Amino acid sequence: MRISTLTLLSLGILAGLSVFGWWVSAAEVVKVRAVETVPLFDPNSLAGQISDAPHQVGELAVGQELSVVSCTDRKSDINILAAYQDNVVAVGEWKAKVQLLRRPAFPWEQGAITSCQGFYKSVSVHA
Image 1 (cartoon, rainbow, N blue to C red):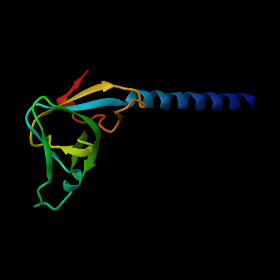
Image 2: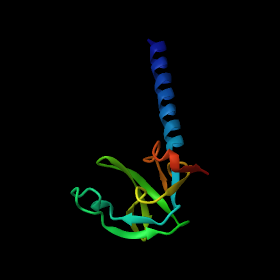
Image 3: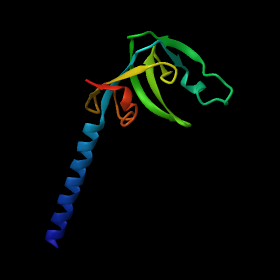
Image 4: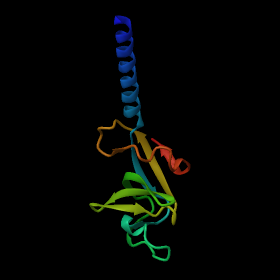
């Protein structure tokens, strides 16, 4: 009886350490850099009717960067959401070329996210 309790406790600790290790290694800080002039849209205007055009709220000049807040699944697309003038905007990466600058981070770091893991690998650069 004592051996099975010890075994279960050891397995529980091992599982907990594995989950903690994954959580610590999954976070990253991501910035989006404009390679071309990139339009920025109100994220709420992207999921409108088929004939509705998204509402543009600004643009990112070539070479400018924004901090990515998250990657969000909207209908059939994954949108990059970034901080812009104290607002969250959708980056128009489908209209102009962008580059994602990624670096590993601890989950508690300011700006660390996990929602972009696996997305936009073809336009990503790891710092």
